[in-house]
Image 1 (cartoon, rainbow, N blue to C red):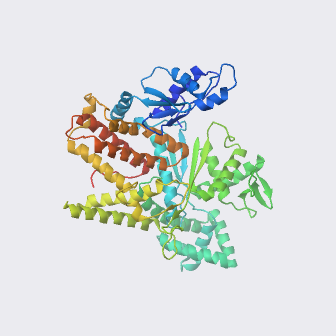
Image 2: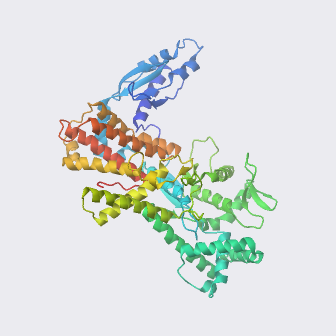
Image 3: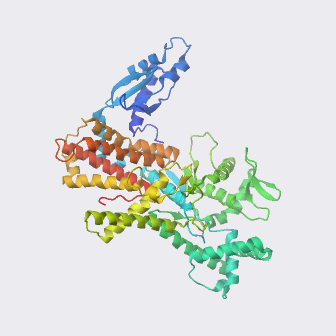
Length: 593
């Protein structure tokens, strides 16, 4: 993901050194370095794993090495002088282990402290990125199914922004189409004043109205005809229909924003209605280019390898999701000038987006597969949220779980837990502090429990599991951070002043070095996360960092020890990286609990 020529990560620096060595030792091979972390830290920090593959390529050629170990020896001998690698060793048939110098690690920690955590962010070759996430439907309450898209998309957007991208956070809400004809017609017939009866709509009422309208649409042919006529009036700009539609959208907008505010998520609304004026021109362009053709009355794009076509205009002249998505991808690439467009939806929509991407390539809006040039498109799919019984997460009555109720319960459970601990310890309870802690822990726990799982799999939602004080949970990590902040607070020293004063930062104990290595590897976690668009790469890193700190603190005396000042710098560096991880994950850190 990093720009060519910029080796920000430690792994990137090592890759550059071994690339030089490979070019020197075997110039004709044009071999790219293969760098990985060592499985056993006793032998080194990283491995270069090129020797065996390179031996296979060279085997039988004149002057070729006799075995992989000879290849590895030649590579090591060609490494340029550097201050990054302390020593190398060979293992097995030709693995090159290398240990990073403690002086290098100390230098990176000092740079973090003087230049800020942002200095660790790996640069991207993508400058403007559109992230399409959350996307609830108007006239319906947000439920647990919207949770994953919202927080996965937010974490991806946060990380891209941290790495220097200009990110457009789009909320592609469902605010147009046949469903509004049904709802508007039902409201007009149900209310004494018809559509002219102006009122502040309520989402819960709208959801009840929508269910009734849908039932009528499915069962009453005459109502179905009237509902479709209402859609036509709405799309033609009928004032009463537009006014009713706007009231419906406003009610939903208020409901959505209340949830986003609690989650700390920022989005720019750009619903399906935004693209409606573009649909006719998009379909005409697809037809003119020969990308779309009429089949059984509908205008379709046939994609190789797909059994069904992408219908960009229905036989009755109407437009559907495919039409809107085609208009959206064109607008995002050509008008927004995005060089990367990311869609975060459930994994079941992957085939649909594969067809949209393929159709956009046929239209010339995207490069052909295999092109290294932007714009790039990615579908970030995710699995279902399941109940503890392994079935789709629902209430006892069988309804989907409302997101607001889920957040309320998580917050209340954390509030009760913190209050109980304060009472046991005899500490005074400040209501404002308790409220802040309950929000940070409750909402953070919900987010982290989701993000720590592979997005591609289903996961079981369990309040008990996500609020555990031990293990890989947000609650444990928030407590861990509060304890680390407490160490610095108890020391009573200005750590920045220690750094500015030229405090001799030393890494003499193995646990000191292990913690420094974990801190320095933060940019690699970001690279891996953005390469795969998998937030659990970041949660795994955060948990590992916390555990590494715990091992360090157990064996290395900080307060009152001879190395107090040096170790305080390491403690504060850990806290700053943890806080940055929390920020990327959308979690509010706590300094005392």
